[in-house]
Length: 135
Image (cartoon, rainbow, N blue to C red; front, top):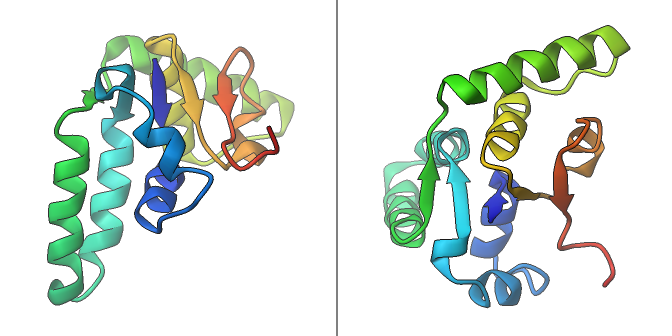
């Protein structure tokens, strides 16, 4: 399963030529979206004026509807705590939301699709793809 990070979905809506064809080539059943990612996207859109936010929120709902929304559960919490403790001990912490997203990917044994390689590459055993890298 591939799990989408917030930036991947944002690039999709911008019509990014690296992201759109790759996402459209996948079956929605093979795509997961962490609930934390849905939160980040909705929060970002709700900061816009309603006339800009509302159509974007509707488009987001349509995109997410056939995908698997992955809850943050107790097993995710175990992964997140370990990730945070290990990275803090090494002096290379990542953001709190990214910690939760990485934990979700590990919990579901999935590959995270992100452009934020700088942070996510610090998480041991996390598999990730950057669709903006050269093939």
